[in-house]
Image 1 (tube, one colour):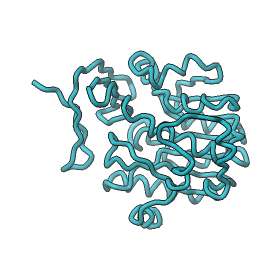
Image 2 (cartoon, helix red, strand yellow):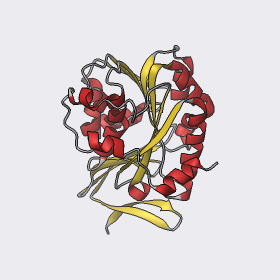
Image 3 (tube, one colour):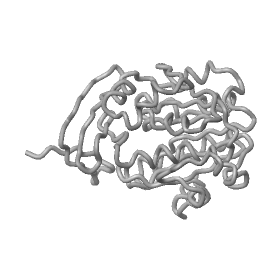
Length: 284
């Protein structure tokens, strides 16, 4: 009998991958973690039945959560990653030799340890770069207790706003992010999708909260086949820097990074959203 991983993207629509091997399943006090292997997507893992990362397309997500911020402020030194237990976001940040400190806060240590074991493509960097400091605690509490003006960049690489990730979509959390960012600080957050109703509702809620707190609050998109609809968003918020007006392509070129998804032409284009997405974001 064939084994398939299936995820409902809507009550009447689901996405399926034929599984070659169910590698491991583990129930922690926070969530259920499963690792699978498939011919098309390689190793992938899910949390509570929802897709997190695949070897095949993770580069799209991890490049797009990271590089637009550095192309806007190439002087970023201190970075905070909330979530991101697979290590892919830390991997991309660590490619910048000018970064001095990367604090990564993941509530569930088992996500990190299992990814180090089964998904080294993203997680191997976590024990190789001395700038990376791992904290296994609640990101909401970490941000609440952090010092004012202590980070140049916060990357909220979270799960959906249910379960352990719920607190990362609140007014209190966004206010604390604002407080601990420097004057040129940037917040990038996983912003859900505009396509299916449930995801679009959370997208709107997050954007409405962020734009009331940050002087600059924009949204950009990218495409990743294994997420619902394949059309996903990040939020870009800042105290002072605009991702288009303050875009510094020539300075970013000096980093000489080879990327598979992000490029300087795409940087500007990703902020040009479809009309229906703009209307959703502008609606109350």
